[in-house]
Length: 478
Ligand code: 4AD
Ligand code: MG
Image (tube, rainbow, N blue to C red; front, side, top):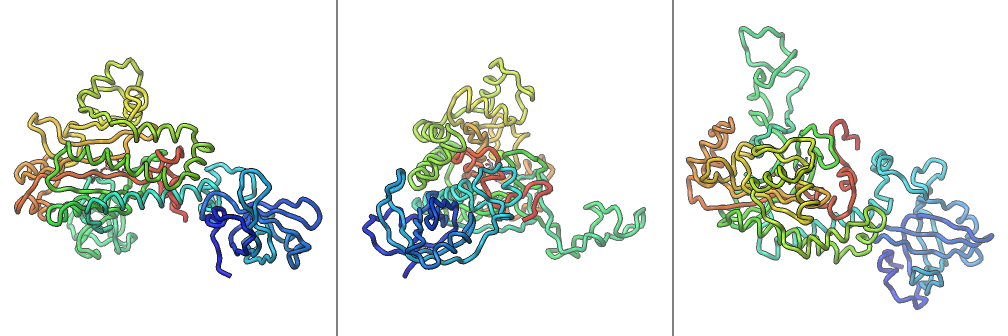
């Protein structure tokens, strides 16, 4: 008999048809001698399939019921019938049951009671078996599919940009070094005045990188933007979508050392076009997930955060506010709110400022734009005022910054000056500058952090709980 997934079994009309299902037992209830109920889950949906076990019908029924505990993997054949219990249309009256793997009730950590997210992080290999993480995995999957569909349906090319790179896109120096050198004996450039014997107290400047695998310092990418610009300026609208890495030592509930980012890049786009696309993008993908994951989303609203669905509805149904950075500063200065970090023109907005604007002042998403140039990376278009660049950040309630983007500087001379201003060597960016030497066009793009979007969607409070295996400072165990 072919295996039917629980999701399909639950949707089927109960006509007494014979079916077979397989999965993991969530709970067992024995009502009287030789009679029991199993809740079977196979991850295809949140709900379980109720299995009714009558030991006088199922061969070895009594012995099987004894052996089966929470976590046991089983196969069941039986008749799909209407269920008398409320809250479920169907149940499976078992005629045959077999065990794939037992789960010792004395040691299996996921017993029926609810577990804290902190505890579940310590058993990241088993937490996919919980309701929350099953739902998270399905929502994450639906979100990725919605992202691809959004761009594919608009004719964007999906470009794979490199994970290993020798340029620092965000210019913040928060990169993980990739090397095959034996760090215990890093080769030194010969220096007559070096006070240290080889292998001790190395500084990056002392190391002879020509002996390394790539012949120069290489790192894990912080963003695929620079590389994807080469395609935007050739084959047109495109996006890159993959893992990105940041060695920020920020141990917050909103930062990961390894996160996924989708970065569209569009030629003949200026900042206003970029804002428009970002807004349509967010609303479209949120709506898609609501449509496709109704059961999981209802679970998050019920069990994780009761405001999730209302917040999403509000975002989807209303225009985003567009506000220049300078006006945001005026609002923050005159709002009468006491902030931990004092506000004045030129500061990098902190999470508390961003959340005040989007959660309390406007109560809807805000796109802040035209930031001070001192705060932003070298590649952003310099405004005529000499003070600001065409940057944009999309801020949403509960999360703060969910998207960062900009119009790119497409004027060769201005870009060379900007690189120098940012203490970067234009020679290192020769290929990026070439895009401005040959057939330069206005272009723009943005990056959406997948896990930030999932915080918004699921109501989860900690970013470590919206990715299967979170990487954070001092944590990459498994
Ligand atoms: O604002 P960011 O640094 O922008 C860029 O990387 C640009 N190159 C994007 C572009 O224009 N193509 O990062 C973009 C988004 C942030 O808004 C945030 O959602 C997410 O990436 N992000 C992080 N998410 C989790 N952990 C971190 N450490 C993150 N850093 C950024
Ligand atoms: Mg940013």
